[in-house]
Image 1 (cartoon, rainbow, N blue to C red):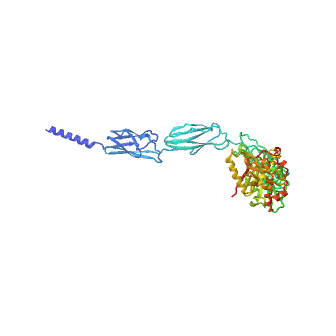
Image 2 (image 1 turned 135 degrees about the horizontal axis):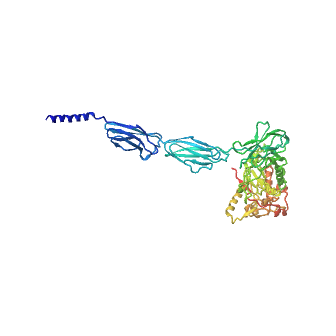
Image 3 (image 1 turned 60 degrees about the vertical axis):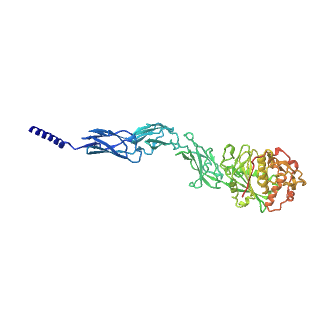
Length: 634
């Protein structure tokens, strides 16, 4: 019995000792904070515990944890589910909690936002010689890839094109031959779903300036120079290939304040855009510029002294003839495509404008009515000689922008308003006076063309190139300026048949009727009967037996009528028919405030025998086309 009691107490003591001697629950982690990579790789921590344990996570990060339970020490691997990088602008965190009995431990997990920093931050400078290298240092917490497609020819290579985390990219250059600073390329580096852009800039090639030009004329110290001097120079040389050198001449009276002439590329001379003062000392130098940095260089400065006036200034007006009438009809003759040097006194413009005026005054009725005119010549400076040609895409820098249509057309257009402005530089000329005047623009170009623009208020501008010979020029001048511009006459030549061109004919008929009401086109009739024509009062008059009814005028072979077989308005010959002479004289007499009727005209008319009025091709030219334009002024 005693032995049983002793055994019982022994068992009881063992249980009590077991219960009372067991250690408390304990769990530890290492480390207690964890960085979760953005590239999908695994982070880990260890657990040591004296109890079985389990794991839970809470927070922004969706974590994949392995294992999630255990009985003692264990290495725990942690990754972000789906290996998703953090592309937000701030870090994400979650807490892993380990429970072992009544013991707890935690690990703070942080995934930083993806980021990339580079050196340089924005622009990588690279040299302009073959093989020059530059490095981009990269600090990144995610995989990255550089886009190297479509590299410019001045970049030889970019490598590597991808990396993981921190790294560097090497850029290798090809030689830069371009002296313009425009070699820039944007390199884009992608990391996660973001991009980093770095501009790669290559310095331009060094520019070698041209040699200095040397002024040839005027000679240094020269006296009695023209007031429109031609400044010429020995051209510069440039060792850089393919460069076009611009030259600008400068002149001054005090060697301080400078005036620039126009810049030229394809010539070694220039004339000031305005005439210089007489008997004045000027200083001059020429600048050469190849258009690149450091590419300007100037000649030595020379001096010269002008003499007396030998050239007309731009816009200068020269009174050629003054009328004795209280209300004269004004004629203005100016030029287009004439350089400053062409406006010398007695020079090309002077000669051509005089020839044009004399050609007009050498034909009836202008011979007889010469006293009704006050005539001015007006000098105008252009930058280039010639005429622009629309059909060939040729543009000339001329003061009135004269442009020949070209092809089958002899039509010419220009800046009418500028022509009016030049005429109004004359003090006595007003807008109202312009309604009783006519402007002729002689164009310094040898092409067969010409057009007169007539305004319904009486103004007109005629554009007449020099043609191919003097006779052709004079004929065309009389037709355009004397016929259309002053006489308000219509063309009498023909191109179309009414039956074949009904739409065009009806349109022309409306034009004729409209301008008849305005006092224009009295040399053309829409009717085939003499009694309905504008020249009915000349029919049957002694000495005017050649006045009749001839079908074909106003561009059509039929449907419009003229009064005589042939005249200046048909083929530019030196002859205006009787009704044309009457229309011109009537306008001049009415403008002068004199009585005008058919009787006073016949009394003064210097008519010619009918034989002169017959066709004589050697006296005329081929007909014009598109040589008269009409503008209604409202």
